Amino acid sequence: MPDAFTTRILHVATGSRERVVDLTSDCDGFLREVAAGRDGLLNLFVPHATAGIAVIETGAGSDDDLLAALHTLLPADDRWQHRHGSPGHGRDHVLPALVPPHATLPVIGGRLELGTWQSVCLVDTNRDNPNRQVRLSFLG
Image (cartoon, rainbow, N blue to C red; front, side):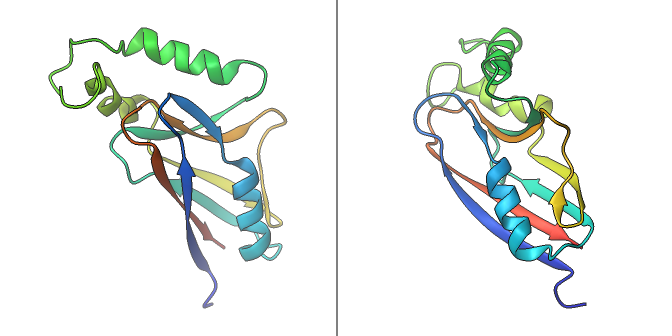
């Protein structure tokens, strides 16, 4: 089956501040084009050492709560061995251990199977890298 696996790169401008970027509509659009009503898996992968993918509620403050929790767990100060870039940048390199750079999600009938309040998000705490890539891959 030649169209069993399809992949695409999203280019996401995150700017110079910490952000949680909702990618759910991008995922939905990709699946409308490639899934053709099939069941399968959607994989997201961020090829960056300082960003991750989270499935989280957005719009009700949970995205800001996530960033606040990451500040508590990974303070942006000078305790980190990795010291180039902005002050506290070393914490950005620890982020993927807590918010992994990947997620694999079920696709049923060509649609992403998320819970009512779940969104797929890019989590980027690195203020030094304003442009990110996210690879979307569908395996039908």
